[in-house]
Length: 227
Image (cartoon, rainbow, N blue to C red; front, side, top):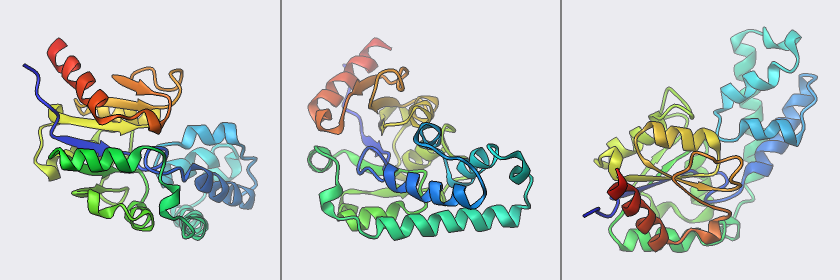
């Protein structure tokens, strides 16, 4: 008989709150500084990707800037972060995506451990602004790992810290890079978003308000039983 998962590992952007617009505006402001045309379509490629890797992708749009010294790249990445921090400072609990706090509360009451697995170095700050920190047993951000998504390290680091086997974990993501990371870690992948962008998720919903604890548990157990 399949057993209930022991840990939920949540992505931040697009799952708990939608700071994607803030990231877009912050990167757009920086792209203009380096002479790059940056639009929403290209921004889709940066979802779930770390700051330095995102910067590298943007710079590739202007080959003349792609060969700049590392120190200059680090300055630009820091500038983007400053732009972003200015925007997210206005975040409040009203910015929690629909259904998420109820899911966190139910998971916690059910004895499931909860971790955050985010590509953002500002993850703890955002959770604090959302007043959700008390739900989380562990936070993994970009400063915690060497390899960002789609590498599985974000999720395996969280599971290791919680003392939970990878197969006993559920990862919840809205980006293909994140889903790939979850599955590479040997975990059950829940995708939030369009089926076209999340074809590899083990279970998918269109939006966060469809994330029901009992549905996730049922799908996880069915998946475990089928293996």
